[in-house]
Length: 160
Image 1 (tube, rainbow, N blue to C red):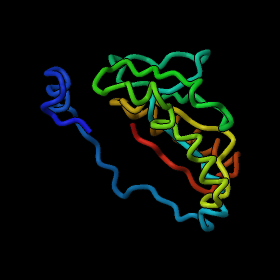
Image 2: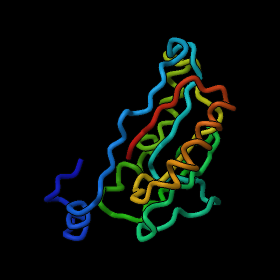
Image 3: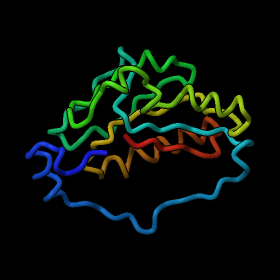
Image 4: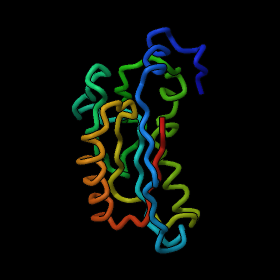
């Protein structure tokens, strides 16, 4: 985690004036079964994508609310980070994409019986979304439908 003093002056100035939103009440659903009986979806706010997928839009647009869908069977090492910012050290991510998109860890949890399985599609998005209307009105409902179609009984959100 970065401290404010670690950030460049432009990022600190942005965070000082950003109009943070509060969601109250926080949307929540109680799972219908124990985790070991549920197929679990995965949403990673990591700007990770397959090399042939479109780039995420730059920061100047207010963030890119469009998802990139990848197979849960993909080798995470094939994913590329498309985040345009440099406010974190990319070395760990370069060594293991599971740090941000824990596909292998999800398969391990399924093999151990901790979860029933991983949904067949994984969603990756860019976490730096400052203009959230499209995310709320379009993207989030579409992702919910995708996981409903995949029979996911729960979804793990991995922030970056």
